Figure 1 (cartoon, rainbow, N blue to C red):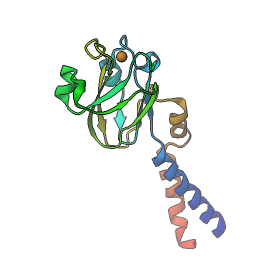
Figure 2 (figure 1 turned 90 degrees about the vertical axis):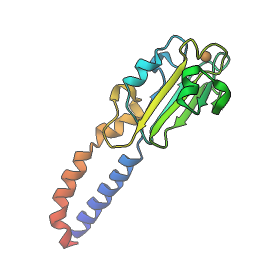
Figure 3 (figure 1 turned 45 degrees about the vertical axis):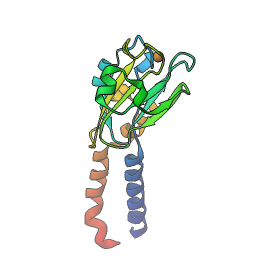
Length: 164
Ligand SMILES: [Cu+2]
């Protein structure tokens, strides 16, 4: 019995670590991607961005780029000269590593003014991301191993711990 409980404990701890490592990937603009015709304000408001999540900008690199802007005023005025980072690969991943607001625009002349800009507000916390906005690969582990399962198993194991 002792070996069985030790084994279960290892499995539970391992699963907890996997759960914490899983982050949601948000494909910017959904299926329309990073494009002038996409309404990024609506897209952003329909999503929850958490610390550890990633943004993925998908676009034709010959037409667009991604410029990260350093301030709300630069975002509002489409001032791409004060950029803090720029990407041009066409499938660019940006990790949201801390809480707060971040601003992105297209670097192609005129595109930001046409609405090709994005403001995201990143929050801390453990609430699940909007499943509709995440890719199936990143949301699947959440579905397989919801947090309450760990609490349930832990509650079952706790009374047995003195046996170890
Ligand atoms: Cu563009």
